[in-house]
Every structure is written in C-alpha cells, then in structure tokens.
Length: 181
Image (cartoon, rainbow, N blue to C red; front, side, top):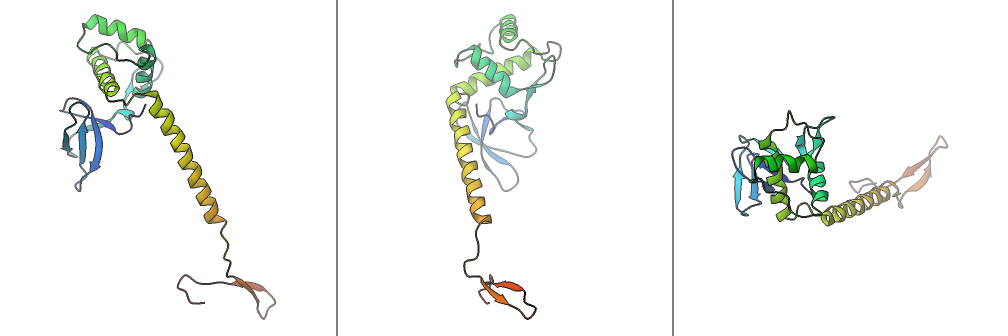
C-alpha cells in the first residue's frame, strides 16, 4: 500500500495525488477521481493520509493499517459503499476493524474511510504487489548507496609519494584540489 503522496484537502471533496510544488510553497495536485490538476495553496488545510490515524480502544491505529484490515477482509476487492445505510456501515466497520473506539469515531469518519478506501482501490494504490516491489526497490537502492559510500571512503590517493623530512618523519605528498602540488 502506497499512500505516501496522497492528500486530502479541506473544502474539496475526494483525494489528491501530489504532482509538483509551486514557487509560493503551494502544490500542484491531481484528483484521483477525475484526474484534473489544480493548484493547492498554503492557506488551505492539507492532510497526508499517512499522517491520519483512527482511534482504537488501546492506541491510535494508522489509516494504512485500517486499510490493510479492510483489504484482507475483502480479499483485495472493494468494500461497502459509503452511501449505504448507517446501520450497515457500522456493522461492516465493526467486523473489519473491531477495536475502533465507538465513542470517539463518528459515523461520518467511518464513511470517509470507506470512501477513501474505494477511491484508492479503484486507482490501484492499495495493491499488495506495489508494496512488495517498492520494498525490494528500496532495499536495492539502499544497498547500492551503501556500496557507493564504502567505495568513496576506501579510495586512496594513488599519486601520493612518501617523502622524508628533516625530523625523519614520513609525510605523504599528494595532489591538491587546485591542481598545484
């Protein structure tokens, strides 16, 4: 599940994918529903989905984990519509995520979670394969960076020549960065 660049903007319906940053600290975002691009300004309240959590009986659970539970319950399919009857939505959410705090999580919050899940599912952001590939790619990139850093730290100056000084100490003479020895 990759929801790291998905945001919700206060006052606008739906979810948006961050595309670019503008000069004035705003963002260019693309709607996940109709693929239209708009400018989001710093005065608007924007929330990353990876920063959202749901109240539970023990501690707050990240939205990504809630999506994972719904994904597992539906075997990778779409979930119940957010436009269903209120009692259906509550009973569905109790089955999918039984440890949510029923006093602090309102019906409107549950509807929003179900709507967001279905939007992300239709756009392929919740597929398990994407997560596995991205984790493998992250490991490859991390290993390549470590190898590159090790090469940089282990490089020796092959032009260095030991010279003796008057005090019988050996110093290494090499080429300076300016090119003058």
